[in-house]
Image (tube, rainbow, N blue to C red):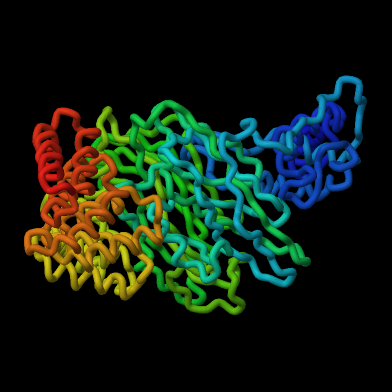
Length: 633
């Protein structure tokens, strides 16, 4: 009986009361491998963690703290619940590892023998993947004030390339890891971010970014950075496209340190010669329209569902909310009723948000329903509630507001590009929730325009423009749809409205010039194309169209007998049509009608240099030479 009683008392003492383990737990024997593997990546000089954990002395100094935060599973920071999705880079200690740390601290944190100690990890302060092919630097560093609240800041980084390149990997160097908590990168092909800057190159504030694009090119990659994360190398066929003239927007979460800090991050790009042959896409579930959380509500539910329109694989997920969210769930219900978890986070913490990449792609058949279920706690018991006492919280981009976003990176099964079908399905389901939504109406208009249905596209662009009257892109695309539907005068007026919103928006001016040219308004069209080229000197299509307008303008003058003015515009067109024998021929004929025979002959000779077999030019030169001989000119 005494033995049984002793055994009964010993079991809870080891598990709960911290009695010494059967064998000593030493740093070099059992603890160092855990620390080096799971902690040192962030806890080292120059990184975001507040102290280093590279030596025995480092770890012993913080031993009690380490035991506390690992037992609470606050460290290492890993949000997903086990058994609800399997992810790359999982940073979760096992129960045995946590108990070892508890035992070691309870035993006085002994060092043990260093004879067989594992070597401390070696980290490079340089790029993880080696020297990048291209390094992008911010134009102006940002100064984070000492007494600042947490800041979400956006740096705009131009991509200085002259030809299209394929990017297989991207790496962010924070420049000041002490304040740089995490970051996302947004591809801005239309340079829409520039409209948010008040000082060119300085960047602008904001947490969640939405840019309208002018071409069909939906986002397909999560481009992000967080402390301790490995740089992601895309598999063959999934590189993303970098275009001349595009920009990257680096959206960073900055946390003050109590003194003024300078932030000057860099982005490294790694190119590949293997172009994109697989077309992933980012799909979003969200229900921000439901968010209106009363003060004191401990379990406010926000839900959304999306029916999968085709067989696809889920490659990664990115749950996002602000400070009030508590439990976040993402799962799929298959057509046979089976529930398949994508992720479950039982205790959301915005500080440790990130992209979670699947160890193995999760297959979802057509007809599966993906569900988002987010629970919010707006009570005083929520330690992360930014309001004390709690107050009503609605949706918004500010950190004090809330969001309910669940992003998935999906890859349709099959070799073809099925993104248009995904965009259409997503837009239609979103319009069921928000009939006046800017993005969904814009995307539907874009799809219909690409399919040749300009009239229906114009209806959707009109709704998009009405949803945001300050959206110059929506206003411009409405003008394009009207023009394509042969409503020329309406298109011109609409494009002028777009330029009233933003006079520097070159796409609106380019399209207005095209409308003017189609109506024979040569002077107005030429002036607008010239202004486009002043703002974008490398715009080859604008150069081509300007040359054509000047030529046609010259033709209209020549037909009315105004050869002098026609010559002026023909000559102005020459730099844009240097290899056009017809332009030289028109000049030659105008000079001939004006009896300027030497200049006429020179232009016909130019025709022959470009087209040696041109018989009309040869005959014209012979006729000019004969006339010059007969007249003595």
